[in-house]
Amino acid sequence: MTPSVRLFIAEEQEQLGRLADAFGTADLCLRDLDANPGTRNREVVQQRCHALHVGLRARVGQVVVVVPSPTPPELRVTVAGDPLNPALYGAPMIVSPGEVPVTATAAGSLSWRATVRVAPGATESVRVELARASVAAPVGVSVTPVSRPAPVVTSPPVVEPGATPGRTQRTLGWVAAGGAVAFLAGGVVASVVQDGESAISWTTVVA
Image (cartoon, rainbow, N blue to C red):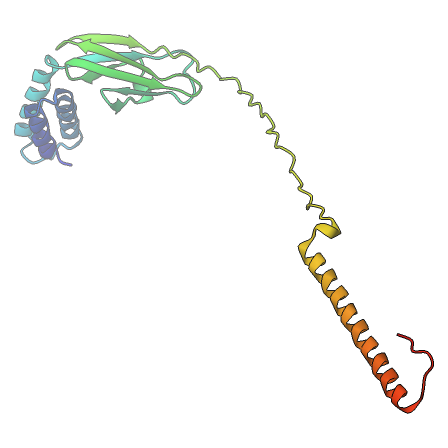
């Protein structure tokens, strides 16, 4: 990115009210010009970038973030929503004036958040204070066994032989059949006797 492009971006950021961004871009413009002496229209670009840089310095604020010592593990700090480079811990950081949110997180600690009111041209400091996260004790879960009622076994009803209609009917049937057989047998005997009587004389007839 050329210094001319950085100048254009810085002027646009100023118009949008992003003063801290515009100040940073103007500063990069001046650094690029120093590193590239042969830049086209170098004098014009340098004058405009310098004027913008000086004018914005009085309109922006600064925030100094002080972190605990030693630095907590996995510490992450943000200022106005932007991550803060660890190299800038304890050093002034350019911010747009107004209410500036500062957050911090670290391993084993609760999240921390603060809001700093910064006036144009002022420098404010904020100290990060992290509280250790309490480890919740494991909660015991008691399990109450659920008792189930014993299964009810129903015995089949005992039916007396004489009280069963089917069996009674079958018995009567067999009795009737037996009587018929006896009757038929008696008829046969009587028939034999009758036939015998016609051929042979019997003195005694057995019924």
